[in-house]
Image (cartoon, rainbow, N blue to C red):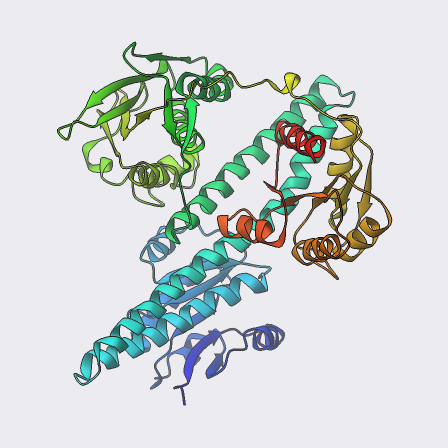
Length: 533
């Protein structure tokens, strides 16, 4: 039988104790509840705890509370979860959090978040206990040591999946915010109202960038990043990046330009999306930390000692520069040059870590040259091979071929996202039917011939995967001559989620929130596919 895991809960409100007891229910876990008074806490505990959850009513009591817990319980490495009403400003608390032994959550407490944190703490404690036993007992086999290691890695994988689930929960309402903001932008607004709306859109896009950083970091941690191998025009990709970044530079009155050496072959093979992601991250950083002057991207071909050809990308700025002590921190996750950078410029501290991982995945190297007050040069080199296929010019949105005779069904349970989808399609000249869950989607499909279904994944009664499987089974049984095209329109953005959609029988996958241009491109694909069936 597994040894009981003991968790200390310091909380003086009985109703919160009851609530915690209700949803923090794990097998072989015992909760020791006490009040927050120091006279109670000062009693000696002989038990060893895996975690302490501490209600903090004010920041002033935090230092004494934390120090007392650690000294009285004689567990210097005891993980703590501190529950606050708002983000703490106390320097001591920030240092505790940075130590990795202390975490914070905010009221009102979201049950999924605290369950995930407690579960990870329990698993870490259990695996630490098992590992300590294995180390002491020499007779244990190497197989058991390896098994424990695998379980520890599984705990990290669980953490990554938790981050992905939280990203999904944030993406769903964010799709509604950005979608309704785009709809509102098409109405008659005063100059002041349009200014306010522009700030909402910028804030939403910034939040989306942060979510994407977290999601990409989770993918990299769990090994779910894979690279495409496709022919593309390098100059075209760079021009797309520059067009995206130009507005940011103009807002700060900065000069943004690029140059490509004449010796560079523009038709190459690689992953254009990930290359674009690296460039956007680095150029956006350069703009963020430059107040006067400008940012320049330079591309040239270099040859290393193994006679491989590499493309070298250099992003040169006239910004604040970086001192030598801070350079080593920059490519580490959740790190920036110093804490004042985060306060002034924001950001997750994940962008450069993601760039480094992607460049390494491509077989390249990344680095920087900088001097405080004299600007910086961030550079990376990646191997490339020339494409034997001449890349043709991509069609602009206005040149894409649409069929306006598509019968469309939208399966979406979120009321706001329903309005966004219907309005976005109507703006492009399409009428669509609406299903509020997976079962309705199947029923409507059985009674009407649709060309395409935009299918959400997480819906009541039948989810999007179950509804798709049901539709495909019906098509097989009836030898349907024209299978319906099914597009996953979902906040589930992992490669694993995309593969599940394709395995269920869906044709395409779109991650929420998606922009109007992405919807137009998808409709062009659907139109082409529908006409060819």
